[in-house]
Image 1 (cartoon, one colour):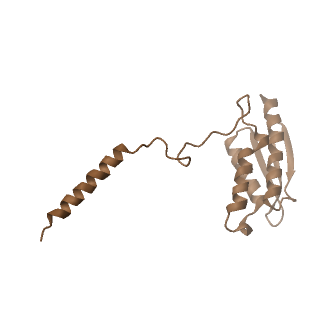
Image 2 (image 1 turned 180 degrees about the vertical axis):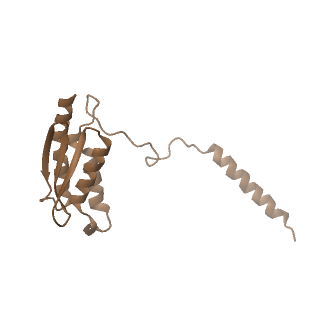
Amino acid sequence: MIYPGRYIISALFFVAAGISLFTIDKEDRGHHFVQAAAAKTDRSGTYDLAKARILTKVIGHVRSHYVDPTRLDPKEMAVAALQAAQSQVPEIMVRVIRNRKEQPTAIDVMVATESKQFELTRVSDLYELNWKIMDIPNNVDTWILNII
């Protein structure tokens, strides 16, 4: 048995959906859909690595929202962060020093002829990781400026 009312109701819903698709304002969709803001810069227009604003925010989010904090290894996170910086910035070279248990104990950061070793023995939580990672760009910024 054919019910023509079903087809009419379906057609009306289809037309209503099409009309609403073209009449809804798509400009302001909320802050979740806005393009990601660029990293904050100072007045000269350059991003200051030493302030590490993005790093501080990320570590804060991980600290407050990560499901199982016991699985975090701050030393390995520091190594991974610096190795990622090494792959993005050609002037930076990173060498990881590990103990017999294959845990990182120090990191050598080299830029051109300058180098410095950063100890990781005291890094045991995310707070100390944040301060240790923020210490490294202070040196790297001055070394890179000396090259240029």
